[in-house]
Image (cartoon, rainbow, N blue to C red):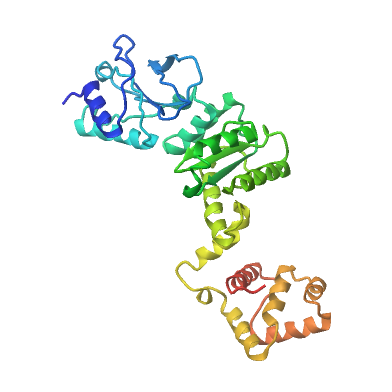
Length: 371
């Protein structure tokens, strides 16, 4: 069954409520869909004309759009797909992309040929739109991202951090997401900010920011306090291979940090890793069934005798078996420390030089809230 451009247009018009702003052009043999967020005031309707996998014309002006290219289409089909569309839909980019694939599959028009996003699909977009499209479409690789970011002066050798900002829905009339996005762009003098999954997300390039990490922290913290906004921050990173994962770091920092310190406005991933790992350890078993049985033995002994063997051993391990430092930390004489360690050896089998054993003991103390 042969499918025409008009059929696809009608199917997508029903599902995503878009307006056709460009007339079909058979002479150019176009095979492109344009997604333009016309519901945003600063976005104008625009057209991208693509022929033979090359952008042959782009409109003048400040446009913020996403191009979805129908790549590798056979000639007998390409001549039927000569529509340039502009969507006024807020549907996710990936959702529309996947739906087009489903429509093609239903009509069995082009066999195994699928709708593809070629490498140049991100080219020509604004910085924020480039990153937003990359985050949304999992088919794009970090090579696509690196190629698209290079014209904006963002290099893989630069230092980046991802920020996820959450505005309470009750405060969004006072601080709408668009307002927050514009403030962040102004604050850091770089346009890596966009709305993603109902929150404001920003990728900041420290090499472009006029200051160091401490300056960044001070400026950002003041902004959050002034606007009553909470945020999660990824670690600083270089390279684009794990770009999406740093968004996950910021997301987890905000989620876990808000539970641990609900009144704090800023949460870094580095500060939530420890409690997050402890939560993962006890996801399926209670702490006392995970930790080293020797630790349970010492806990019971301390409870029965009012001793401090657990704290003593924990302090010794944290101080890398340094007896002087451990005694000073516990405010005890070295002879008292030696007596306690002898008692510990009588109760449990322990090898202070066994690194895996030390790691398990320290984890067990953490799980049991000791030290």
